[in-house]
Length: 282
Image (cartoon, rainbow, N blue to C red; front, side):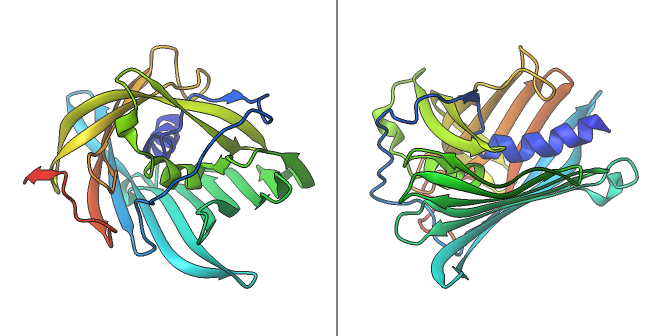
């Protein structure tokens, strides 16, 4: 049952380039996060399927979907981005996973305004809501509940002006110009997770190709440095393949993990901002 939870979590976290996390003590350090052109538009929909190696076969175990649309939040024009992770119905008898992550992005800066996390994994639950205030460089923790117990409520936490939630970090990461990085170079981020700011990084591995059910693609590759603990072991390794074009969509993720092997493939991509120029065949 724990394997099902890990696969669902890995599906979401890997696609989000998340990451090797260390609590940050660098809130005062200058950090530029200015993006001149963004890689997505509020009609985009991405669907992924996760597979786990069961002995001699690969079994499909779960789906992850990302959807964006224009929205209003307390009278403010925003983009609403929602990601859901679900195990396949065939595994409901074993362990039901129903996770939803939502971020509301400012339509002009693309920075997060609000983040919500709703997790249901068996009897384990999480219910979080954060509001971002960049005028005062703070996050307001509306509430943080785990296993239906309140952990934090009505609190403020300091951040810098380049701090993102896990969802908005995904869209920010896709808009970076990776041509400025050398192979093997670490790309830093700062992400607000579980009530704290973290310094995170992915290692740029250069270019390659990936073949999926929706086609073959030229890709840029990343290797997230993972947190050793309940979810990851010291020798775990994950590689993310994203399209080498203006969309920078993750199309394939592979992982060698302490509890087995994992693969995640793009199944559908609709409403893209740019033509899929990285596609090179069926």
